[in-house]
Image (tube, rainbow, N blue to C red; front, side, top):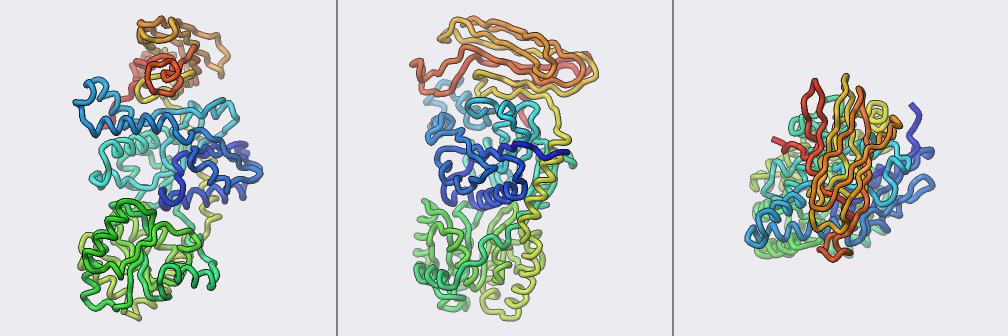
Length: 547
């Protein structure tokens, strides 16, 4: 089939600096490769205010950015309010308000960029490299990337509302994506089991980026090491953000055991990562252990600085409890640096025979690995040689982009049609437009939507108009007076359909003086269902809660 004309890429989750970890590194590299390899296809990058300017580095003749979420978006204010109310407890708000707040905090609102819809802009496919298909539209093929399901394995590392939010993102991708891409076989198996995803929709594409940070000059490397008070081949490196699953506490304990067990006195441990409260706490913990002069926390480092640190490290240690891939492993191997890492989740799969494995939950086991990684010359030589061979399998980023392009092509040629309603917020409010996608069926059915207008609605009547652009049939209309409910019924012939529903007028609560909500709203959707003589009634909204 011909190449797509326009692909939308949802980069709204991208944050400035290193807050996204390896996912951001991968996504930016992938977009560059895709755009360079397919100059006839245009890429529309959906961005948010805090990173919109930073992403200008991706600009190209066939790449443009579209700011869809401002620096202080209404969604962020709603989420912040919701989380604050949840933490303060049910006594702060009536039960019904608390329940609504919980829904807003834990569910993904299906959103649409400002202005024309993606389909009206000519978008052929939506790519969601941060999993959640937030901007999906009826009839538009979607490809989602899945990194891991850590929140299910270690829910204690997350706030309850974050667990709910991540779960809704994953389940939405599992249900609505035409193709889902996992970054390792471990991630693919985990997603397939948790989401009950059909095998033909789920595939593995590795992060083939082992050479991403190579090529730094020697003089610059010396300057980097000097600025951090480090000497070549005299430190062990752990490059990871200070998230709880990265297991820094256990590493500090293990380093203390190794320091008292014969680790060379001049050997230090360097832990890079975006600064914050946990980095401060870990630095204090290292000082309390008497290791303040031997454990360094330089904070966030640039890719160039990280390349310098990797190339000159005595070894890389990676004690993470959970990884979907583990990009620093192959980057270190490519640099000829021996690696010791955890024996759990994806790390054995990625490292193969090129790493010294340990149990990340046992500090004594980590300490033994640190001592061997530092002093066993025969082991170090073997790991370096095996590491270079292993890294070569993850070095071709052009191949990675080609594999994603194949996933895009499969999504375009076999896009699923499913029963779903898009455009309704998590709390049931609709804006200017809803899209209802109905899967093909052998017999006729009927689509029903029940709308409700609160009695305080600024407009005394809201008009609802349904049309099927693909069939060119006449409009179906209903007027909903304030304080009342009405049902809109659309007859469906055999086959599938994409029904567009326009609602007017809309209002903004903040502008109307009835709250701080800055969304454009029209009516509340009470239910949306498809009914037929063979399949019975299927509820599209509200969706059944996952079991």
